[in-house]
Length: 247
Image 1 (cartoon, helix red, strand yellow):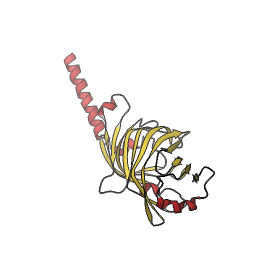
Image 2 (cartoon, one colour):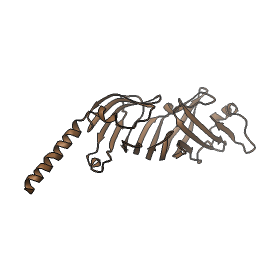
Image 3 (cartoon, one colour):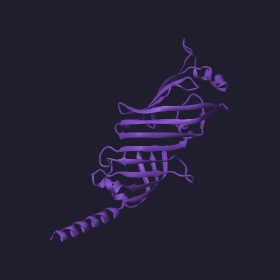
């Protein structure tokens, strides 16, 4: 009797795995609490493994998104999906991450993104047109979706060999880094103070269309000579030699 019970349990488990593996990915997505400003295009495959041609969040496009469901995570009733996206032949960011809490507040861990710096500079409403060069690496240990953006966030941003073009001049900025956190539902982006620009700055992101920032630029010994003529466009320095930055 025990032998037949074991065979039955094995058969039922295999049948359940078969059902999960063949469920269309589009069916699962209909139950996921996706942000209202996001849209998935041309989703194909099954729950086990799927591909979306594009994921759009506001006006940001993430292409060639591939997902794979972790079988072990099903045993804990908290399905985890490994995502990879982008590539050499498509535009937009490239990276990977793990998504969990699919039926509740989305949780993202182990995120690593590499994207062109110009894709960020294009979103900023600056006093003068600025084009950023080279690439930015974004690493997030943990992000939990909240209102308007996050409930929890811990991560960092690295911009190695940073450079920009402003008023037809290209300027090397050295290396810049920042910490990512969550403050009252807004994603915060705080520049590390040790940099060649003498830049201290914090941005608050409540949506891709609602971004604010506040800080100072205090030219020092390592401040790039080519940028000094641009300072007059920012305004006048205060009694500490700092130029106010705000948007």
